[in-house]
Structure formats: C-alpha cells, structure tokens
Image (cartoon, rainbow, N blue to C red; front, side, top):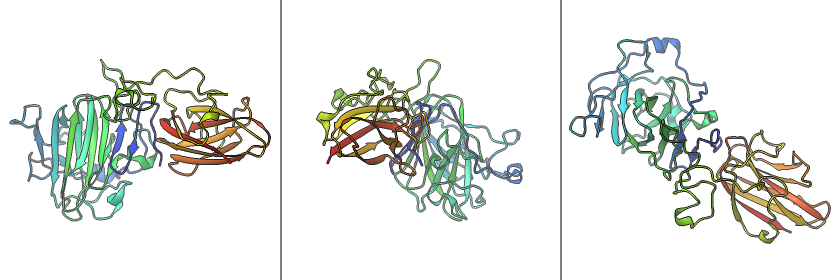
Length: 385
C-alpha cells in the first residue's frame, strides 16, 4: 500500500480516520468484475424513494429544495446493465445536497467484495447505488450509527475495482465507524457506491454529501471549465498554514505548487552542517526527478542536501514523510544512482539509513519519492556519531 498523489494532481490520505482521493482522470485496476451471468441477471430493486422502500434513500436539500427531495436513490442487487431500458436513471447529487442511503432488502445477495475490513467476509449482502455528480465539488461519504458497521466503497466502472490510478490495495473504502471517503469530483461524473450491509439483513445507513470545493479542505479538486485544478491540499489555507505560522510546505494559498527554489533539488543542494542533530522540515512539491535511487522505481521528485564528514564518521539519517519516501546518500555530485539507498517494503513513510564515511569530504543526502505519485512534506534528521 502506498500513500500517494497521482500525476502530481491527486492525493490519497489514509489516517485511520479518513480516505481522501481526487478523481480527475479515472484509471481502472481490474480485480472484482462480476461474472457475465450476474451482469445479465442483475435483478435489482429500483423501487420507491424514501426510507422503508427496497433500495430507498432519504435526500435532503435536493434539486427541488428540502420540501421536494429528489426521487431515489435506487439500488440494484448487482451492477446494472446500462443498456437495459428497465434500469433506473442515475441519482443526481448537486452541491449542498445530502442523501442518506438506507436499505434493509433481505433479497440482496453477496456478489462483490472489497479490500478493506469485513468487505471480503462471506454472507454480507451488497447493493449498488448509481450516482451522477452534477457539480464540481467534494463528495464525502460517511456511515451513520448502525447495529452492524457496513463496508462502503466507490467504483467508476461498476463491478471493476477502481483505484483511481493508485495501487490495487488503495480502493476508496471504509469499514469502521468514524471513517470517511472524500472524493474530488466534477460535474456529469458517474460513480457507483457499493454498500455491503449487515449479514443476512443488509441493513445500512450511509450518508453522501456534496460540498463546494475549497482550498484547504484536504481534498485536491479537479479542474472545471472555469477553474484550474488544485495541485496540492494539506488541509490548510496553503503556504504552510494560516498566517504563515508553519514552514512552507510548497503549496500556496490557491492550492497550487509554489515555485521551487532554483536548483534546491540538484547537487550540491543546501548545506545542512548547522542543522546536524535537529530535525528540519522540507518538501518535494513541484521539484523534479534528478536522481534515481536503485532501490525504487523512477520519476520520484527529490531534494538534495550536503554536509561535511570526517573519515570514519558515522552518519545516522532519519526521514519522516507524508508520502512513500526513499532515502539515499551520494559520495559525489556526478552520481546519478546513489549507491547507498533505503526503501522499506510497503508504505514506507519513515526511513532510516546508517552510513560510515570512507574518507573526509562532502556527502550528499537525497530525499526521494518512491515514484512519480509519491511527493509531499517531510522532516529530516541527520546525526553524526
């Protein structure tokens, strides 16, 4: 699993409390497609709107206002065939609208599974909601109190596990109370919300809310016809924090990359002799890929720092990042592939490296992203022994 931004325009944050994904260019990862038989016989429960009906839901603040909520949303037992004339229309969700998905359809069956939590448990009935986003904004999906916690995940192609360009184990999915999914979405975008409810009953309470895109909400929103796409969003107003109280994180007040300092990502980079022994912040936002760590794929943006070591000095390095980070050290600025490199398996947001200087001289520390989708802020500590 990897904490990552996609094409420097998408951010996925997994904190145990939230899953945040930007959906600007949808990329598909196969893995959970229903069989042809189940697609041909999707059945479904496209019935009355409101709570209590099979596949019913309660909408507030819909297109007609609070007193005239939109019909639906309808659910189907399995992925709908979009060419089937009997299939219910998409449920439209506009900015400032919230809808509660409720279903207690005992006829629903267990057709799909997710990667998170109990989503792979057998016997959990699942239903599919077909959603059409009407406005650019941030879609938030949460679960409300329920005797049994549902598993909820989102796909852009029904029956196919969609990871939105991220690794297959990063399917936008929630399975615990207090978790949420947040998606940066655009108008006319079609999504499928799959809910696996309580065993046997299929009961669930899942709320969908669409809000205006806001720089500082922690979600990278895609472009519209009139607005540029956000490039970064760390949940602040940009520039490292309100009023500039925090160090710059490379993201400005418009959630765009700040112009990086010239050549700070190239050797020799800033000298950190005066910072030895104390952690200091940095970021790779907007920087290029200049050095290729041999223990990771290519294209990760990087930063370089230099410091002086005496012969047999032992250098202990620690980097703590908000992305899948790679740590390496070079003995010469002419190197393009550092010989000393550390990248732990899986999501390695913290890395440490020990190095003994073979001779007195200047050495070069490289903080790198695992790949082009790995970038963000970090804190680096260099300690001489």
